[in-house]
Length: 290
Image (cartoon, rainbow, N blue to C red; front, side, top):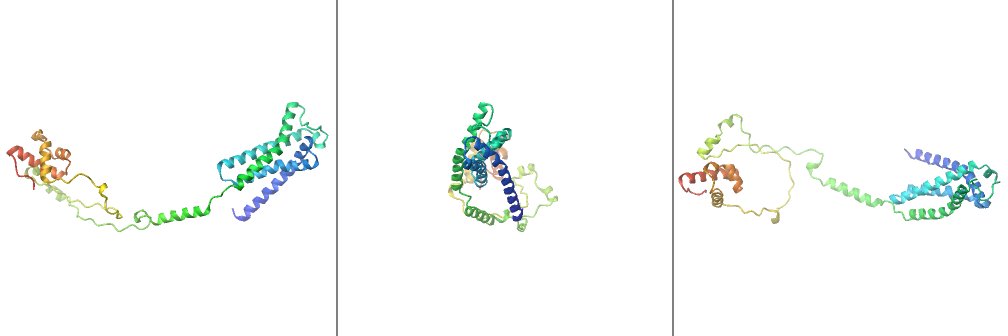
């Protein structure tokens, strides 16, 4: 909605509220006369009740704290109900219109009359208390600091600008070519079978194309505390550990997978350890791995 539309809406609201106040003003003035107010007090009485309603409405629009806003809404609801009750009584008692009713007499039933007189006489005192509290809350209200919002927005923009290229929606980098050419399908048939591998001791190596990954930013040197504390074992140490771990194994249990899991080494070294241990079991000690 543009400014003209908003201004027109506000003007229309003020006109409607003004006419409603004029209608309510007549009833509240007669009620004030019935509870003993003089002509001046009766003239100001409607401003005390309906005026506080307008003040509570403005405070509700200004305050941003949830507790303060709830308090202003409760004051607005309470005085709206009180004004409605007094206007309703004014419509039920015709004597109030001509001012011929006795002082302090708003209803024929005594308990109802006492309650109505208490309500009518307590509204001015409540207006002083609640009005002062609402004004204090509005004066001590601190609106949202625009400079803080601007700083947060600038910080968010800077974070977006500093994101890595892979996170941005812009053009992606050129694909990295494969480091090793893939092996043709026909060439796979010529690879040594597992039986030939065990008899010859050769390890079949399959050429696989390197996986392409997105470029990563340099993270710097890995600190000493983050590095693995396990030392690198030599071939002799690895063979000694394998001998000790598999001393009670049968020859049939000497498999590359079992040795790999036991001594925690790579698959290639596990196959070499398997052949070495089998050779030792068959023909005595052999020369250690180079």
